[in-house]
Image 1 (cartoon, rainbow, N blue to C red):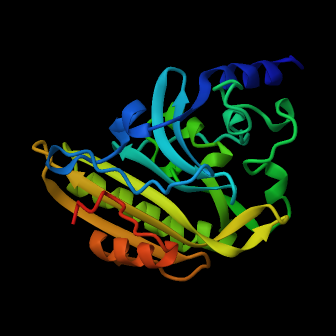
Image 2: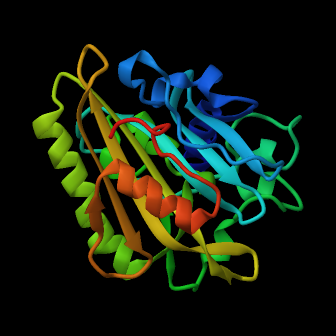
Length: 268
């Protein structure tokens, strides 16, 4: 019995993969809204520090992430929302070996299996920091246990004020889920959740976000926009602002610097 836990961990890891790709709209396009039949992903910033990842569990893509290897936090994760399921949270967090070397395995790995980790956060960065590993694609929105498990990679997490994560942000995640369950049933719901880098760092390595944001776009069976909304909150436990997608695009463009569109300038 003493070998059971390691064996189960190895079995879990054998199913967890993440693929660093050149264009995630080609490899895993199903996570991006297509209003009017036009695929409309969020803005992808130029530069070698930004890596596009298709997150996989087993043989199934679960969501997509744009990752910033310099700040060691994701820019955003994009996924489909298909309803709610009561999933079991796991305690292990993994890293993405291909961010260190593209020739490494696609499978998620424990930190101990990769030496000299430079391009992503590690669990020790968060230890005794006062910040949670804040999910972008959250467990609350997972529609299967495999999808829930796939969210526990540090490429899908950013330093989030504990009171904010467990308070106002959780309220926002729940409100988005409830809205989509009620108003987008039988249609296609797309969500993008991201962060804006702040000025501080954890352990002088991992950038602490100044803002968290999320947005949804519900499309009917003819790919017409049925409902859409955006949310923006400072990384502290204060109420999150709800706004139109157009206004969120404007706010994020000002915060990021370059022009940024959550749904390619659509879903307004």
